[in-house]
Amino acid sequence: MVWGAMSYRGTGLLYHVKGNLNGAGYIKILQDCAIPTAHLLGYVDDYWYQDDGAPCHRGWIVKDWQLENDFRCLENWPPQSPDINPIENLWHDIKLDLKRRQHHNHRELANNVRDCWNSVTTERCQTLVRSMPKRIQAVLVAKGGHKVLKRKMFHSQFIVVNLLFCVFVYLLLYTFFKDAMPVSFRSELFTSYILTLFMQ
Image 1: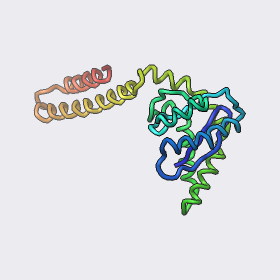
Image 2: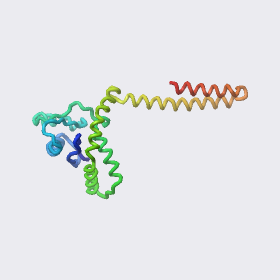
Image 3: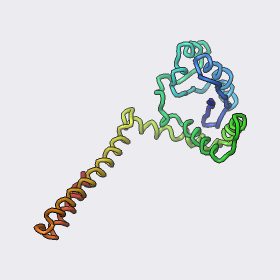
Image 4: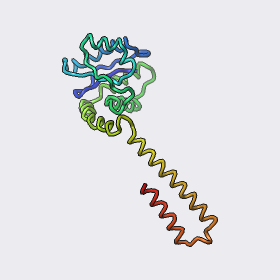
């Protein structure tokens, strides 16, 4: 696992995490990487730090350290919310880039990860940061969840199921009543049901 940070001015330092990350380990990252990254990118005290709200980021030991060191961090950020964490897009880019590279051991993999991270352009970071207002607006529209997406998926599944049912009923009627059913009535029945289905 690796830790990295980005801002409108580009990417910062990269840190390889060994084993599971706890509060003490996260404080070390903040001290050795987060603050130096801010200085490296030209920030002094005029910045806010944002992470993904994972448990190791929100422990009391971490909060105490942040208060003691006047480290400004956006609180109450929802965990497991990649849609409003633009750095997740960078991790996705890096994963795609890694697939095009060869590595046969852990050392080569670590070197490739670092090379991929260093190849991220400032323009890419700026594009992701500028996308935040749109991301936040989408969350507000969905009232904090994924209701819009779920509704669209449910409607698509509803149409497919009903379409299959329509075909089944039509074939059933045609099989048993084709001699007594006028050709025009068959086509009108099928067409009217399809139109009704897609108008829902």
